[in-house]
Amino acid sequence: AQKVTQAQTEISVVEKEDVTLDCVYETRDTTYYLFWYKQPPSGELVFLIRRNSFDEQNEISGRYSWNFQKSTSSFNFTITASQVVDSAVYFCALSEIRSASKIIFGSGTRLSIRP
Amino acid sequence: DTGVSQNPRHKITKRGQNVTFRCDPISEHNRLYWYRQTLGQGPEFLTYFQNEAQLEKSRLLSDRFSAERPKGSFSTLEIQRTEQGDSAMYLCASSLETAGEQYFGPGTRLTVT
Image 1 (cartoon, chains in turn orange, cyan):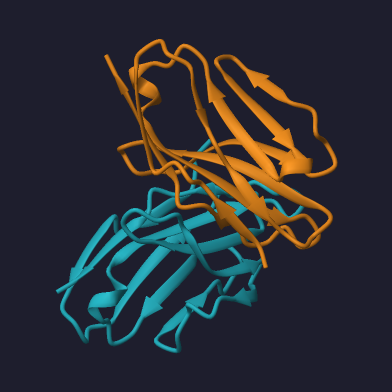
Image 2: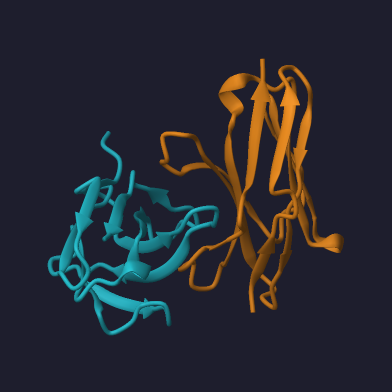
């Protein structure tokens, strides 16, 4: 069975602080995708990143970076120099590559950035 | 470039009534997905189509729920004899067959009174 755990329900930091959102996953598949999605207060899920299980290279995009560690089944997301606009619910998610069908989502981490 | 659109955005209905939601995917995407999201939870998969074929249905999709994608373009999700437990946000997403990431619409918020 596939499962995604986001243990941090809510995080609140002051603007400009760095913040890391944790994600741990479980799967029996040998090849899989990992994702992060953002859901701002407006409600629409926004795709942020997809990683393949066979590519453990970390990725940086502007203030965002992702740390994929297969050995610990983790896919953590760091926002550097946070801004108020980063306030949202962030979901980590997983799907198998073979069928690339349903995505299994974690329960989300609500991130609040205080000015 | 238009994204995924869903109509209506909000629906309030009385218990026992039938409701139908519509989703228009990104035009070149051949896969279309339906998810349900309740407060404080992540989206849960309901069903998906590749072109007009419905390839997978979740156990969450009781026999009161039916989805169609007759011409492989837009899709409809119908809930018959709605119950209060059906109150949720219903999300539609689309993707290319060869891609893993799915792009979501704004959702239809259903309230059953």
